[in-house]
Length: 85
Image (cartoon, rainbow, N blue to C red; front, side, top):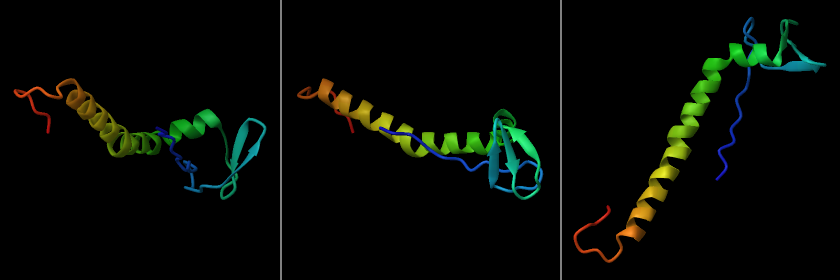
């Protein structure tokens, strides 16, 4: 299972989403402000967290539910008193 996801980082000043990488700095093409990777990640924290939540709800949680259900069905297969729906 691959839960890789991409989040487009945006400039905290102008909202631009295109950057030039110069050494350890990222320069916004739209407003020419420069940031470190850490600064960009920090300023886009809400966007990153929202994407993490989406991946969790739409991919990870359903996969976990499916695996648990399959494991329980295998464990109680043939048992007349317990049924897993």
